[in-house]
Image (cartoon, rainbow, N blue to C red; front, side, top):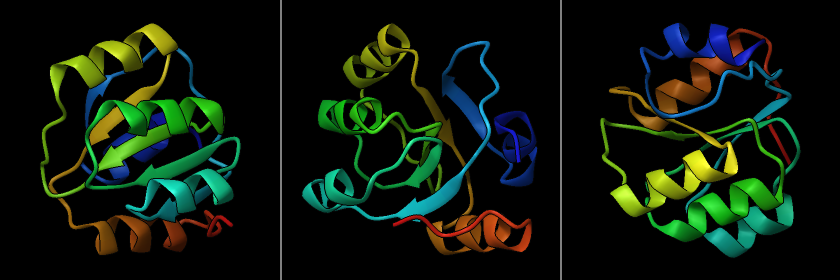
Length: 113
Protein backbone atom coordinates (compact mmCIF):
# COMPACT_ATOMS: atom_id res chain seq x y z
CA UNK A 1 0.00 0.00 0.00
CA UNK A 2 1.23 3.48 -0.84
CA UNK A 3 0.95 6.44 1.52
CA UNK A 4 -1.48 8.06 -0.93
CA UNK A 5 -3.78 5.02 -0.51
CA UNK A 6 -3.48 5.08 3.28
CA UNK A 7 -4.72 8.67 3.63
CA UNK A 8 -8.30 8.06 2.39
CA UNK A 9 -8.41 4.61 4.02
CA UNK A 10 -8.16 6.16 7.50
CA UNK A 11 -9.88 9.49 6.66
CA UNK A 12 -6.60 11.26 7.42
CA UNK A 13 -5.59 14.87 7.18
CA UNK A 14 -1.97 15.59 6.25
CA UNK A 15 -0.44 17.84 8.93
CA UNK A 16 3.07 17.66 7.52
CA UNK A 17 4.31 15.88 4.48
CA UNK A 18 6.29 15.76 1.33
CA UNK A 19 5.56 14.95 -2.29
CA UNK A 20 6.98 11.48 -1.70
CA UNK A 21 4.59 8.53 -1.84
CA UNK A 22 6.44 5.77 -0.01
CA UNK A 23 5.29 2.19 0.27
CA UNK A 24 3.85 1.33 3.68
CA UNK A 25 5.89 -1.73 4.66
CA UNK A 26 4.18 -2.40 8.00
CA UNK A 27 2.09 -0.82 10.74
CA UNK A 28 2.81 -0.34 14.41
CA UNK A 29 1.08 1.12 17.45
CA UNK A 30 3.00 2.07 20.56
CA UNK A 31 3.47 5.14 22.76
CA UNK A 32 6.66 4.14 24.60
CA UNK A 33 9.40 5.81 22.56
CA UNK A 34 12.23 3.55 23.72
CA UNK A 35 10.17 0.54 22.61
CA UNK A 36 9.48 2.10 19.24
CA UNK A 37 13.17 2.91 18.81
CA UNK A 38 13.94 -0.76 19.32
CA UNK A 39 11.21 -1.96 16.95
CA UNK A 40 10.89 0.81 14.36
CA UNK A 41 11.49 -0.10 10.73
CA UNK A 42 11.84 1.60 7.35
CA UNK A 43 8.49 2.18 5.69
CA UNK A 44 6.54 1.77 8.93
CA UNK A 45 3.26 3.60 9.56
CA UNK A 46 3.43 4.41 13.28
CA UNK A 47 0.24 5.14 15.22
CA UNK A 48 0.84 7.08 18.44
CA UNK A 49 -0.83 9.60 20.74
CA UNK A 50 2.56 11.19 21.49
CA UNK A 51 3.03 14.59 19.84
CA UNK A 52 6.36 16.01 21.01
CA UNK A 53 9.59 16.53 19.07
CA UNK A 54 11.04 13.15 20.02
CA UNK A 55 8.31 11.42 18.01
CA UNK A 56 9.69 12.98 14.85
CA UNK A 57 13.26 12.12 15.83
CA UNK A 58 12.36 8.44 16.35
CA UNK A 59 10.38 8.28 13.09
CA UNK A 60 13.24 9.84 11.10
CA UNK A 61 15.86 7.66 12.80
CA UNK A 62 13.88 4.54 11.84
CA UNK A 63 13.16 5.84 8.31
CA UNK A 64 9.41 5.40 8.82
CA UNK A 65 6.89 6.27 6.12
CA UNK A 66 4.67 8.30 8.44
CA UNK A 67 3.40 9.07 11.90
CA UNK A 68 -0.36 8.77 12.44
CA UNK A 69 -2.15 10.59 15.24
CA UNK A 70 -5.48 8.92 16.10
CA UNK A 71 -8.68 10.49 17.49
CA UNK A 72 -8.05 13.87 15.81
CA UNK A 73 -5.13 14.62 18.13
CA UNK A 74 -3.21 17.81 17.32
CA UNK A 75 0.58 17.98 17.22
CA UNK A 76 2.62 20.88 18.56
CA UNK A 77 3.70 23.36 15.90
CA UNK A 78 7.38 22.87 16.79
CA UNK A 79 7.02 19.14 16.10
CA UNK A 80 5.25 19.77 12.79
CA UNK A 81 7.95 22.23 11.75
CA UNK A 82 10.60 19.60 12.52
CA UNK A 83 8.64 16.97 10.57
CA UNK A 84 8.54 19.27 7.53
CA UNK A 85 12.25 20.02 7.83
CA UNK A 86 13.05 16.29 8.03
CA UNK A 87 10.63 15.25 5.29
CA UNK A 88 8.50 13.17 7.67
CA UNK A 89 4.79 12.84 6.95
CA UNK A 90 2.42 13.34 9.89
CA UNK A 91 -1.22 12.35 9.51
CA UNK A 92 -4.20 12.95 11.78
CA UNK A 93 -7.17 10.58 11.69
CA UNK A 94 -10.51 10.87 13.50
CA UNK A 95 -10.44 7.10 14.04
CA UNK A 96 -9.22 5.38 17.21
CA UNK A 97 -5.83 3.67 17.00
CA UNK A 98 -7.44 0.24 17.13
CA UNK A 99 -9.55 0.92 14.05
CA UNK A 100 -6.65 2.48 12.12
CA UNK A 101 -4.59 -0.66 12.68
CA UNK A 102 -7.54 -2.88 11.80
CA UNK A 103 -8.04 -1.09 8.49
CA UNK A 104 -4.34 -1.36 7.66
CA UNK A 105 -4.28 -5.04 8.50
CA UNK A 106 -7.44 -5.73 6.49
CA UNK A 107 -5.68 -4.21 3.46
CA UNK A 108 -2.76 -6.59 3.83
CA UNK A 109 -0.31 -4.30 5.65
CA UNK A 110 1.56 -6.58 8.08
CA UNK A 111 2.25 -5.78 11.71
CA UNK A 112 5.67 -4.33 12.40
CA UNK A 113 8.32 -5.62 14.83
